[in-house]
Amino acid sequence: MKSLLHFIKKLLFSLLILSASCSEVSITYEQKLKSKRQFIEAGFYGANSPLLPNDKKKFNGLSFFKIDSTYRIIANVEWDLNCKAVQVYKDSGEVSNNYPTAKLSFVVNGVANELTGYSKSKKNISSLFVPFYDLTTGIESYGGGRFLDVDVKSNQQVVLDFNTAYNPYCVYNPNYICPVPPANNALKIRVLAGEKLPIIDND
Image 1 (cartoon, rainbow, N blue to C red):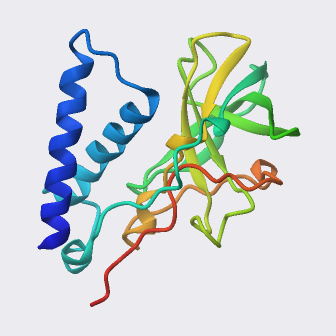
Image 2 (image 1 turned 180 degrees about the vertical axis):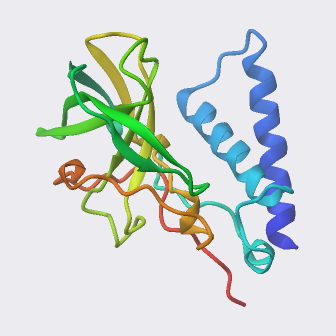
């Protein structure tokens, strides 16, 4: 009950931030991200929650690393529009064809990195799905990797905001099927941003 009351307070704050964003009041990147996180949490308490009924009663909210702009990065894009489709599992259990169309190159704390981004088609690409592992995987973050949804607004560069990295639903419910990041999307750095392992109250 306490966790639900705490969530309601956070949600009210989130709605206040969203309301402010529609006015002339400027809000910070951190406020926007916190508001988005609180909005996502609402789905875990609602009727369409991915949680099992017993886990829903014990749910204390999502767990995140501290917001850090170091992990909001500009990546250069190298496109491969001749690539072949690969099959990607979704949380629903459905399988869809995705194309490894984008090689994303970027630097974090002086370390060069690459990730492959996947798109649903090879034409008019507006977004990329980027599954990844990093050195927090299996320790502070989910052992099956985390995911990014990336907007494509330029052919040369995209923004990789690891503060928005999220877990698949199978982390919270074994009835869901997790997409598996490819082995080449294993970063040799600790990404101390985005969603962490969930906290479930076992009392």
